[in-house]
Image (cartoon, rainbow, N blue to C red):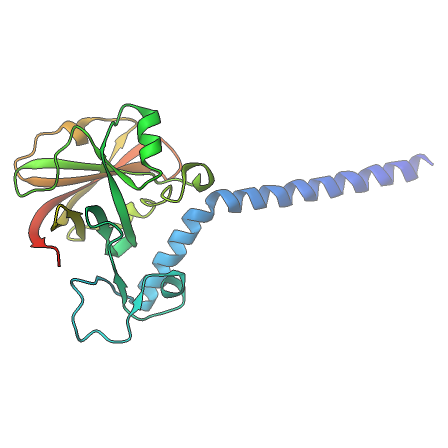
Amino acid sequence: MVVTHYSVMKKRLGTMSNLFIVVGIVLLLFATGPILKDEIWYMLKQVKSQEYLLISEAEISVENYVTDSIFARYLSSSPVLIEPVDRNFGLVIEKIGVNVPVVMDVSVTNETEYMEALKGGVAHSITSKYPSENPGNVYIFAHASVNFWRLGKYATVFNLLRKLDLGDKIHVFYDGFVYVYEVVNSEKYKGWNTYPLTRPTVEPTLTLQTCDPPGTTLNRLVVTAKLIDVQEQN
């Protein structure tokens, strides 16, 4: 009788252990899903040598192109043409698939304000400059996170910001013009550091900042780019 009872308890404990393991795996996949999704897309893009082009920059001779979509990103190898989602103030980084509105004049110190703003896109600091040909720092920050269910659809927009290399292009649409920047530096700062926002600049500069690693506040990843061209929007 005692042996039977022991066997039943052992079986139940085994079942519960397996259940906890399964639940743990599911939660892990759920939490890291956005990062895995972005990494898989980026890997496929590299393997397929798939081009992402702004519609204004695509050559007329480009054939068999597709517009940006889940199908285009994961199943097609044709060139992807990107139509900016916001021409009044928008950010496009073809290399990492970023095409997002910029929310203007957001406080970097008021958490309630910037968390709300980041639900609508990436945020432009209220203390920084606007895109122009004059010297100044255009400071834009956004999430690199896993909490998409809490932070909204733009929670993962900068998850791949660390993939940018020197010379990569960044397009900012603002007030009828397209400002083309070229990446000149990428660095990390411990915790909260205001230097990337307050540093003096002697040329038109774009600063992109996010948390690193994604989903943590351990470091700040800061990408710096310089203005290389200004074009009128079509």
